[in-house]
Image (cartoon, rainbow, N blue to C red; front, side):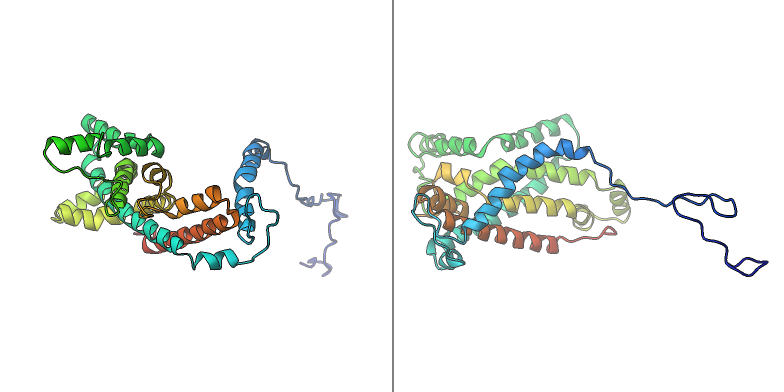
Length: 319
C-alpha cells in the first residue's frame, strides 16, 4: 500500500533480519534445512538385508529370464523373449498352470466359505469357543513339510491309519496319493484342513468390527438370520473378505511344499504345479533362465488376479 501522506510506497525491508529504515525490525527469511533422520540408522541393517536377499535376487531373475542361462554352461547366450515364447509352447507349463488354477479356485472357495461359517459359529468369546478356535488354528502354525509327511503316512494304503480303518470296516484299500483322479483332491483337502483356522481367525476379527447397532436395527425391522448375514454381515466385512481371499490366493498359487512332499508332482504330472515345475527346471535341470521366465509369468498371473479381486471386492467408506 502507498503511504497515506506522501502517496509513495514504503521502503522494502532489507533481507537477513536487519532493521528497516523506519526502525522496525524486518522478519527474517526462512531457510529450509534438511535435518538428518536418525530413523534411517535403525532401518539401515534391515534395508541392506532386504536389498541383498530380496530386491537383488528379484532383479537378477528378471535378467536371467532373457538369457539361455544354464548352470555350468560355457556360454549364456542372450535370447530376449525366447524363454517366454518357448514357455507358451510348452505342454508341461499349460498342464501345471491348469492344475495350479484348479487347486487355487477350489481351495480358496472352500477356505472362504468354511472359514466364514466357522467364524460365525465361534465368534462369541466363551471358554469353549476359545478352545475350539485354538484347535482349529493349531495346524496353521505347523510347517507344510510336517503336515505333508504326516498325511502321507496316514494315507498310505498299506501302513497308514486311514487304510487300517477302511480295512477294519471291510472296505477296499484306496491309494489316495497314487491315483490320478484322487491325488489332487487329496492335496486340496489337506491344504484346506491346514489353513481353515487361519481364515476363521481373520473372519472372527472382521465380525468383531461390525457395529452392534446394525444388528439391533435389523432385529427391530424383523430380519431373520439369513437376511441379517446377507444384508449386514457380508457387506460389513468386505475388507476382511478381500484381504483373506487375496492372501489365500497368493498362498495357493505358490503351493510347493505340500505337493513336493506328498506326491512330487505325480502321479504322471497330475499334481504338478507351477512352482513345482519351476523347481524342477531351475534346481534339477539347472535351466536358470527358463525357470526365471516361469517365475515372472507366475508373478504377472498373481498380480492380475489380485487386481481382479480388488475390483470385485471394492468398497467405499460409506458402505
